[in-house]
Length: 337
Length: 251
Image 1 (cartoon, rainbow over the protein chains, first blue to last red):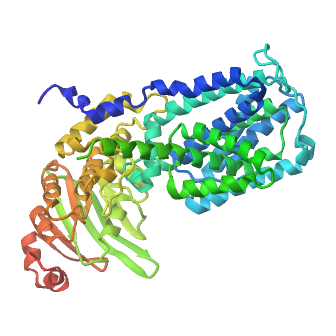
Image 2: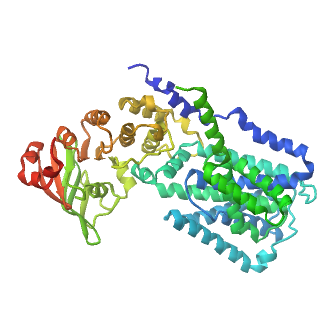
Image 3: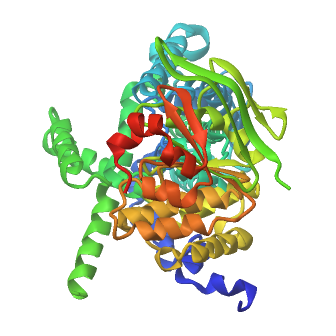
């Protein structure tokens, strides 16, 4: 036998040992986001909305794309975070934004944990319906608790303390909002990226690829799923809290099926289980929605629907998947055997 | 010196009116090479599911090294050293061969719950995975994803995942099923090369494989043990020939 570590030189071993390394192109989305700040100072509100949507989509990607948890109720956690942050500030209990975000994440995580313990005993269509029900229950609760949530009218005109005591949220010039959202997104992204390349993340992928086999290799499948769901809920809650802070209001739309469906569409458009699918999908969705609604104000969703049909038919793995397919295609053409 | 690893006492399993296993007394010792044969629907896979804890038996007990494990869930039994392969491939199809084995070994070594450091930094897991793939002559395919492999080599990955768990009892559910005969030797060679001390139970329809591999054969018919003995005894048993070998035609 040769030296004990020689197998680590195998290309497959090296690929696995180095797959978490940061590639140069990974700086691109962040550079673009910074460039956006300077290039479009009048569209920072749109930009902030986009950043929040990306963070929310990343949270869904962790649960749906990586662990294979089929959910149509992820807005439950987004709304839980938004209402926690919004209500605490509106009623004057807690106006500090950063710790407020953490509180929003914690409340969403608790709801994720409690519902996950029950829901994740099921799978497939049953799970889909149950996640939808959880969200509907929360939405109705928010609707009925008028004194706290303002029900249908929501809570308008919330004020927060300045970020770090220095930067005011200005509803007219949302510079603080944009930079703040970008920083939170970056932290959330780095956390999720670390998680999915970890052994834990690898085991989540295993559960998605073959749950039965994961049981047979001795993995505590349900515990892993509940942990993943809870973390995903926490991040969705932070995204929701961020939405409340950057918009300075909360309403029932944060808990709506519409929002849950939108984030799912974003993920399907961009490509789920691919980390950057959330970025591509959110940009594609928001830009399309923006321009389509200018061209056809009454029926803009028709264009989006058509695009989704095309994606479902020809690009199952979203826009990023399409790139992969094309790249493989050209590589195969260049090296004919 | 052989020790009894897993044993069942009067294990029965009913699905409604169907009795898939009735009063099965069975054991696997260390170093055993046993085979379970029987016509389709005899309850062979059900019996493996009872040993691994996929189902709880309707009646009877399952022991491991003398300890009652009847109520132990599947994952806990794997930790004790009971591993299996599946009749139909159950692999992580989108992942590479190396990652497939990595998942099993990470689970065994307790590396899997770690969230904050990259999987690639567990060199010990990667190294052991690669050594295992070398043993099974799969190293050249380590970077391929499962869906790129021919079926015979996929079956080998089934075996690799189970071996990555360092089992003391290995249950092989039709390891060569669906493998074209030109490739089946790679499976047979791998089975021949299994560590001598582990107890192995193989289920198969391929009588060549069973008679080549097993030192003890149990015949299961309609959920009950119909006959037991050495390959020679089973081959000579007229009842077995009538019920089973007759239709599966030896050789």
